[in-house]
Length: 155
Image (tube, rainbow, N blue to C red; front, side, top):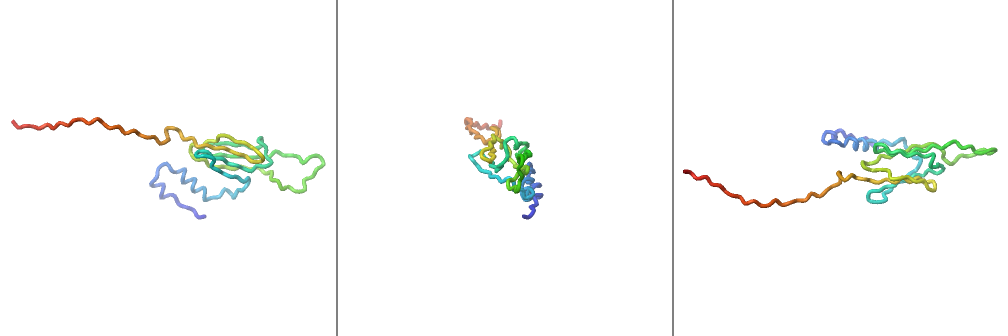
């Protein structure tokens, strides 16, 4: 993918710096990180859900943090012994630590998170403050005043 130069847009727009930075960062993959796999779905008009496959991780080994429009999900497995007298011959189940970041739009908040059957569900909701919602302005008609024409007379 080629790089897009947003500098001409900086000259004619105000306050969109973060948007252009986000668009520019989309062109640069985050190190081709594919673990853990995830889905993002819309569950309602203003609600979303991120589902991550975190099989083998317990809720104590996963941390979720939302800070300044960035949602960070980290997982770190504690060392588990294979048990007395057992030897691991092949490791096919991933036990590596991970950190996945998601950019959140303005006014998107984390509602909750749940771990069920090896899937981590993070529920999000867009809460637009009342002062930022569109509002209808009532139009009132002003009472008509009678206009009088004054004429100057020459004496």
